[in-house]
Length: 242
Length: 234
Image 1 (tube, chains in turn green, brown):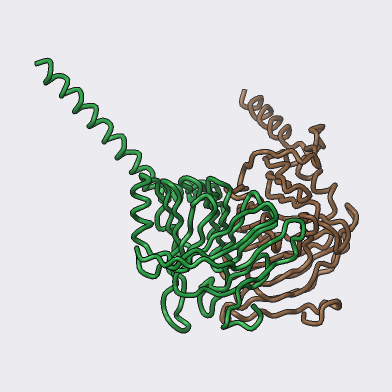
Image 2 (cartoon, each protein chain N blue to C red):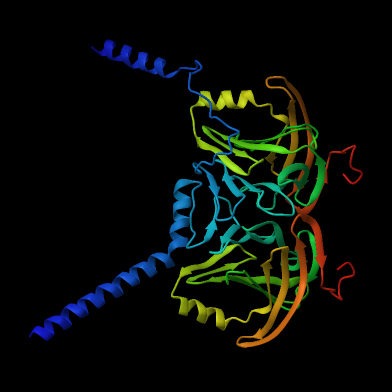
């Protein structure tokens, strides 16, 4: 009888834990919808953010702050900016497109370094947070179709063409890693803050999920104290001025 | 008893109509002491990015966190394809806003030290600069009884709150609007115009003229009505 009571208590405990987890997960899952309702009710306040993602009081502007100081500012039909708290005079900007925005041009502090080398582009922040963008279509119908941010237990997915925040969730680290692994990163780069400045460099290509081809080379660099100087190490054969 | 009640009610109503200036102190600004956002202002998870939504659907995005170009974007929910942007450059991390674009077209550079834009609902934004090409020291938003003040020299939100009508008026009156304009959504599109200049507080010189226009039937067309004498391409 004593054992069965213990088992009963354990079962009740487990059921309560599972119910709590489910409730928390449901709240997190429904956060954007709840936030939209709040926005509609109050006129201007909105806080749909889960984790480090900010939606704001205006449409189509998202910001993300990674745990180690990486910043991402995304203005729909505008520019995607990659910045870092610890290097104020640094900015990678992804921009451009034809009929629709594809964000396939890459600037380092205003200097056009290169264009994307494929349909997928990933930037990894020094703390491991990463953002992956995917472009699809041909000719004038070519447009960016997804932008996903992965960091630790957070995953946020946007449709950059419409500005819709498709999902914004906190999961287990294993679940986020599984989602990340299921999506090919494409051309993948990162940057490192050094004692003398900042270096922006390529890491690998992953055109098929799980098949990474390492390819480390420098794209550009900045020098501390000489913020207007941008060193362009990449000669994009398609663009005369890079 | 009924008369007495009416007198008390009338007295109460008259008592509410007090236009007399209050002794309420104005916010102390220029301290670089950050305050918490309030009302319709949002700070974001990224340093230097602020947004504001006016009561009538106007939107403001202030981005002074990037390296490349500081920007103040103004949009409106009632005209999704419209952006009025003030851009410029950083000098020792202080932004200098001078270039005015209607959508992607460079219409003009600012002509006075300060620049003010009115939204159709009466909300207004004023940028205060040291000289026409000098550093922009502050950005202030007035919307009804909300006032928000960004100190751009240190990138700090110094004031954000709801104050009395009298305090709004006194703060507004103490700050010259400079070159003041606005925009209106029309049946055929959107009109961007200037209204007056106020280089010293209280000295308003009315001068309304059109700067640019957008057209609903031709979404990519931007008509530039202003010939900036200092810019050959406008």
